[in-house]
Length: 287
Image (cartoon, rainbow, N blue to C red):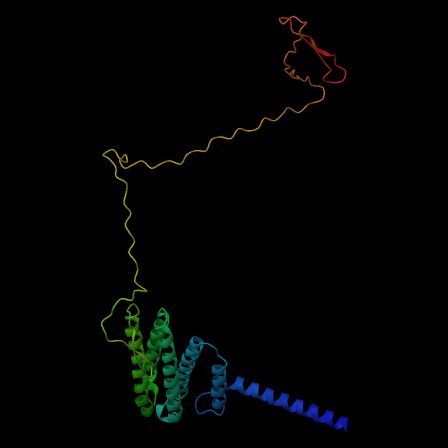
């Protein structure tokens, strides 16, 4: 019985491995799928999973713009595949344009929201992106079927709105009030009140430096600046000579006050005998 359960477990693991391999192969093959292809749904599912695994507002916004750029690339590829616009699948073009608009507006909303709360750097990136995609739409428009060309006008107008919105908000980044508090499908609306400079970004003027007053010869005439006093030199301690074997050493004689007694002549100093200073030397007599 245990052997039967073991065989079932091995078979189940083999099936799971096979399913995982097929799923991985399907995702790999679906990377170049176009609207209308059998694997296009797998491609879009993989993109949704990638978006779900993206964390942070800015990375998510940029991921939306990345997907919108991919949709426009698919439209260009379809236009090259079908030289005659009348033979092209209109549904594939319309689906790609709808997905393009959805990702472009989602990315625009998130980037504008982030940019108006920071330094506005993302507004420049958004403006450049929308300008570039609008140029791509203009170049491919003549290769599309009539229904797709009519639908493309809406996408082009949306890109123009994003460009104008980014420019308008960039012009108010130094204002105290940047947005009006309202928003639409592409993001926050710029404020319409007169621009009042934001004190947080206003630069404080630098006070001019005043040169010292001088006479005609260039000599300063102002009060003399006190100079820093030079600390007195610290005398170095005297180091006693180090005795060297074989050298003559001069030893100073100690000064001893004379001892006077009642029987000795005060004019004649007494004799003082000192023991030898070094072994082998004679006794020193003073007096």
